[in-house]
Amino acid sequence: MKLKFLSVAISLLLLFGCSSNIEGAELAVDLSDIEQMNIGAEMPRLLYAANNIVVMQGTFGVVVFNMKDTVVTNRISYEQIKSYGITMMMAAVSPDGTTIFIGNDNLSMSSNEFIYTHQYDIRTRLIKETTQQPSNLYSPKTIEQPGFHKQYDDIEYGTSHNVVELDHSYIYLRSSSWEMKDLQIVHCPFEEGESKVFDVFE
Image 1: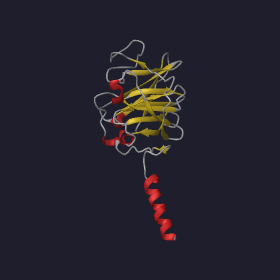
Image 2: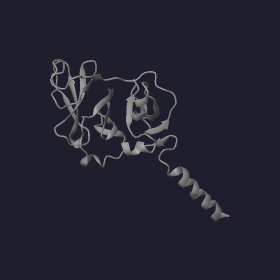
Image 3: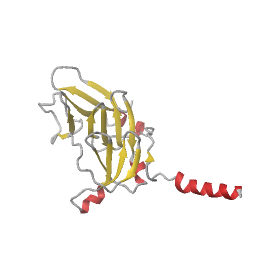
Image 4: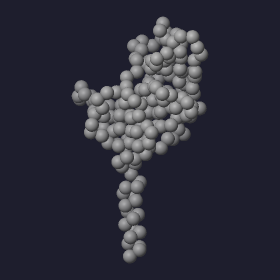
């Protein structure tokens, strides 16, 4: 009897406990591949920045960086998201910076409307399916042409093509090379003051 019960328990564990796409599954934060990763054809782009939290998307997937603690707290890699049926990830963030909405970019090619299929809780690191579409999403300011811009004195060619404007400052991404390990967050004041630079993957 005990042997039969143990056999059933192991079967249930293999069926549910080892599945990476179960409801409310937690995504681990693994950065071991960053050292060998290149930035790729495009610089990572900002999805959100406020309250010491910066969310960005690049060849690493989506990461959340805490500027107060200077650490990456969350990551949704492309490898992790494949098990959810998402091969071309598109991500956006709620206005309060608590939730990342994720969908399959290739599904929107046949439709003018993008559909988000999953939502990820930044605080708990849990991802789950969703059928309810967000009514509002955070939208950073896009710089249409890369290069020097008068209103952003610290931005030069080779940086991210979008910025987040805060009350008295702005945030953007840059890198001294095409290696992902050199990616930095720059927080600049609009007026006088010193810029703060954060190494994302230090």
